[in-house]
Image (cartoon, rainbow, N blue to C red):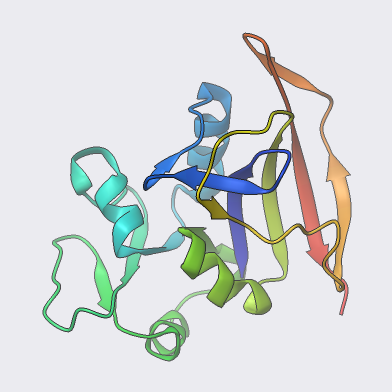
Amino acid sequence: MNLIVAVDQNWAIGKDGRLLVNIPADRQLFMKETTGKTVVMGRKTLESLPGGQPLGKRENIVLTRDENYRVKGAAVCHSVEEALSYLKAYSSKDVYIIGGGSIYEQFLPLCDRAEVTWIDFAYDSDTGFPNLENLPGWELKAESDEQTYFDLCYTYRTYEKTE
């Protein structure tokens, strides 16, 4: 499995249920990486999407503890185990974990690759992501040239599990 995330200098990912920053090229990369694939997200992440609707042209899986939660256009699972059982029908290389914080935390040990947009700025945040630079078993395999969006600098990084 893969995950895709945008982090700041402190490996923060969000504040008050929202992304820290909206970078158009990062959105385009997200679209390119996930279109035609399977995306796994938490209920709060789904509800933060435009119109609170599942992403088009993707198989959407939403995790929630609410047994009565239903959403048109997505499979709803109530545990990591249930999601993993559902995901057996899909190639793991085509599965992307897309957030939020607790979903990343639960699925990170099951992922082999992380596509990270690393933003060279520290935001006020309340949700973080594990720093893959300091996490045993993960290695930086590729990094883009520095990109800019107005005065923000960022790079695209690919990390792979080594263990």
